[in-house]
Amino acid sequence: MITEAKIGIGIVHCQSKGSTVIGYNKVYTSDYGKWSSIIDDTGNVFNYVKIDHDTILRMIHFSKDGDGWYMCSMKPISGRDEEYRASWVYFPSSLDLSQKDIKAVIEVAESQIKQKEFDTNELQNVIQSYTKIIEDSPLYEVPTEQRGFAFRDTSSGNYNLYDLYAYMYQKEFTKYEWVFLMDKSQLSFKGNSVDDISNRKILESYIIKPATNEFGFIPYLNGVEFRSPVRIMEGESLSIEFKKEGYVDIPKTIKTQSDFSISINDCKKYFKESQFVAKDSKNNKRIIAIIKPLNATEDKIEKRWIFNEAELKTVKLNVMAEGYIADSFELDLHDKSLNDEISLPLEPEDHKYLFVLPLDRSVVKDSASIEVSIHSQFKINGSPFEGYKCSGTPREGGTPNMLTAVKPLPGTSPSNSNGVSHTEYNGKKKKHFEDRDKPTNLPIGPTFDDSEIEEYNPIWKYVKLAVMGIVALALAAIVGYFVYDKFFRLPAPDDVSADGDVIIDDSEGGGLPKDKWDAAYNYLINNDNQIYKKDMEHFDDLKGLFEILNKYDFKTFVESIDKHPHGESILSIKVWKRLYDKAKEIGFNKKGIYDDLEEPSITFDRFIDNDFSKMENEGDIIDGQTNFEGQQ
Image (cartoon, rainbow, N blue to C red; front, side):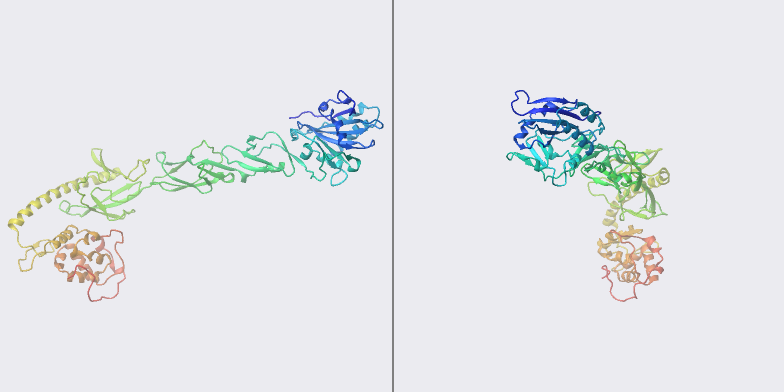
């Protein structure tokens, strides 16, 4: 910071030839001005220009250190060849001087070189009158090497000498050792060694100072913090970058001091994506989630989100994670920094499923199935029970999901094929059904709650006993059948009564058909609660029958049973007799479909209990052939 600056004046008597020392006699010099560095060789200008004895030659020079400029006024001495007097006025770059001030000082200095006697008091008084300093004024930008002479005509164009006092600093002027500012008619040139710059544009200069802003950004110029004022010419600019931790750099082109301001729309705050953390609201543990801000710009390279300063108090984000309720958040990030973790709690989901398991009728005589309720944080996509398959993707909301036993593949063990483990719970067995598809960082799986354990564990004990009994009975049946077939077999019965008693018919052609029909009939006997389309289609004698029922084609169903070669055997099964009687009672095909899933099934109780009177009839009764493939 410059705290003091003064005008300097020097008066010399010069002799350009014949001097063996320095060529001039110093008459007067003030404290300011680097006189010896510029005065000693000014006499050689007369090798390039010529003036008469009544003319004052004016020329300017810019100090190489950029701290100011000199006006040199030279007047030849009449009758003395090669002798002249000169005044030198030094104007510091930090003084706040008007055109009038500059003109007044130069006129006082020039008045002294016209006289034989110098008035040093007058010189001293004039330079002490101007002490107004421009704080933090930058130095002039001056080349390290200045060469040659230049001329600017002050008698033509838009700028006379007085006008130029307001715009004396010109980069065009600083290139030369000396620049003549003269009326062209008052001098002549010797040769072509002086450049004529009369037509060069005169430019105004501006001082750009570092400025603070309400948002706390720091300006940088050329990668360095901008702390000192800079002087620029009209048409020039500074490329400034405003920086602040946690914010995107703001580049601005500065031409005037007013361009230094920053608006709130320029401010862009950013946060690293890793700062936003989704957590389980119950145990506060981190979870893997998809987090998307609604009012931000994503920087994929830097992996960060950029927000407008004006919107920092109402930042909106959507968060979703497997096994959790998706949620939206509105946060105030105005006071958050890059060191803060931004927590986003999610509530675990609660999926409720109702599964229906078939029971062994020989063990539980008064019930064909049991319902099991499972609560899980994650969606269940298949049967959760080992050895059972579901009739499609399990559905929630109290919808029963039917399960049927499946035969394990050869060489596989049913003990742990479906992720079921056993642990002790108050002396009882508790089953934990683990979701193998859940994220590894979420050790939460569906479980039975305590009330369900107490309610269903006795049933599971019976189910296990029933399964063991069925296996034992199956082995005994195989051995017994072999003995019976070899030694005691009678002709097969052809019908079964409504009460389930076997009717023996020894007449010709009587009895149940053998081979394939035996397998089909056994399927119908063993699946008197629920049937599957893909199972029915395995048997030639049952093909098409499932689809007739699934489409509510009751008229077609009656006709198909009546024409079926084993129709009486089918009707010997109670549930099929109930279906047949219900279909005859309805008498029409109905519009609609019972199960349109990928693997459709029919549960008989639910099917028969429908109110078919509310369904629209499918046309009139049409006699003729049906599409039932089992007919002959």
